[in-house]
Amino acid sequence: MGDIIGDLNRRRGRILGMNPKDGIQQVEAEVPMSEMTKYATDLRSMTQAKGSFKLTFERYEELPAQMATKVIEQAKKDAEEEK
Image 1 (cartoon, rainbow, N blue to C red):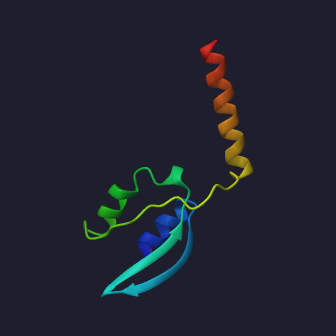
Image 2 (cartoon, rainbow, N blue to C red):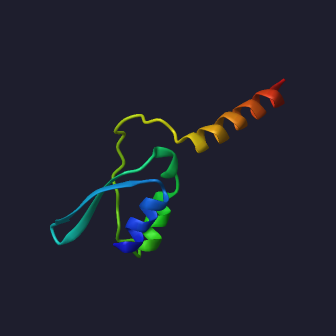
């Protein structure tokens, strides 16, 4: 459980709760979609292929300022390359 929670925190996730359910431990968290691209592979590695997850869209949220700056700079660079 510690590895999974640590991984979700590293992905900018918010842990909402941990619930025991039918003999398993269920972690409920909100994580940005952009951070979940390779999560299935990482989860299988952490749980010896026993873990599973369900991904659903919850809402849009503002990007942190430091990350927004990087995205804007990359978009400007890409636009200049297209010219």
